[in-house]
Length: 556
Image (cartoon, rainbow, N blue to C red; front, side):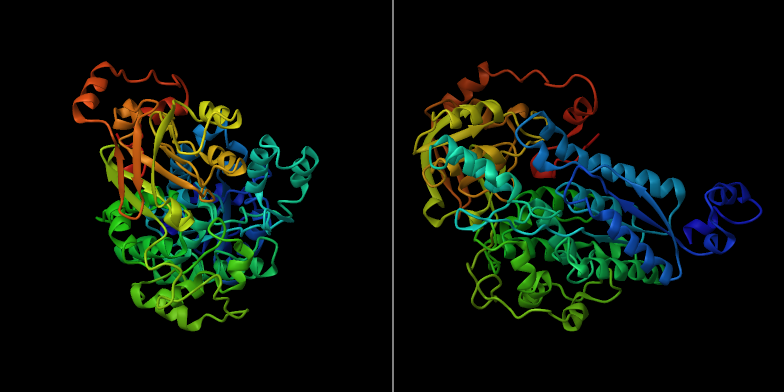
């Protein structure tokens, strides 16, 4: 055991004294020491219940014969950070969290870790840290929240408020109706009730084999969440005893499984960033972006939930959740891969017991899917030479091909102001640039802009392209992650108002209808932007952040 090397008598009695000052005894220090990495706080609904989840993980760890220690990590809320300066910090927080976990685990030579987190950048950061450290590790999410009162033909959620603001601006609802959503759209704690990045990454953690079967989608307030937390505590002790480490689980085969499941459930486009970064940390020689491109053309979409339909995460769980998806997609998955249960994916599928009957309106089979191609698409062209990412699973088929005239904005705020002041019309393509990893910095989400277009009834009449990101709940016609980004001199930097742009999502094409000579002329007068942050963490991130096509990791 790693911990025994620094707790051995007499050389390390100093270290033993440190533990004993906190009440640990000789028996505690003779056992494997498991760290609980907890992102609990009272700022983020997805983390609000993690203190209770932690207590049940501890029960399992002690029952499994190990000793538990616990430390916290930061966890910021994308929802609270939307549409203002705070969103600059969300993606960069991923690297901070991964680094913090590495520091704590290595400084204290822990034998294994249980990772508690639910939200957008926290889950990928924790998986990245596990892969980097390569010690026994399991991730247990806090679970999604329940859906709220019906609004717009479905159970409401946090995004309903943003859509409603567009409706209010367009005179479609009253202010009283709008304000009434505040207390009715989020009836419990938990990660947001739709298939955004948070729930996507929890689902993909289960697909990777890093979360126990069924653990991704049990609602935050359901007692099964506590039961599986205790099972997780027992399971980490088994992994430590058997020497099963993170890289035996996170490898080429499991990353390929995660890509296929992401396509199959039409998960968040941000998963492309995070799985690319995860492969980097696991030192797996695999081109994740190319994998998405190739597999999207032949991986059926077997799940439709919000934002692709009216069903939410609670419904998805009732329909069988990720275990049902893995069972249905089994013939095209690598099922011999090891998982955190200590069993293979194939063994987990066979052993899993469903609580509810299947719902083919939510989860279909490979033979009769919703679509015969995947829910995420990679686009390339003279406007995005490296790549752009879209989500056909959440785009109305009538918008899979779109040609329009550019309305160009150099920040998210400029675009949102224009949308709410009715300066965007049908046939426009909203271009939001200088929001990439370096230029943003931090690659902010263009969530509000898309929701405002929806609320104004323009979501099927316009498109939006950006070197920033999108929330997993966005729908409409959109292409994000445009790479190279504007700040690095990508072609999106020289687009002008009125330029014609064509998108063909299913064919993977994005084209600026400006001849090569004119593009060269525009670049001759283009100047790189002045960095927005000259001090603090964001100034460091903007210098070191890589392209979106490389996962926006920090490179030296």
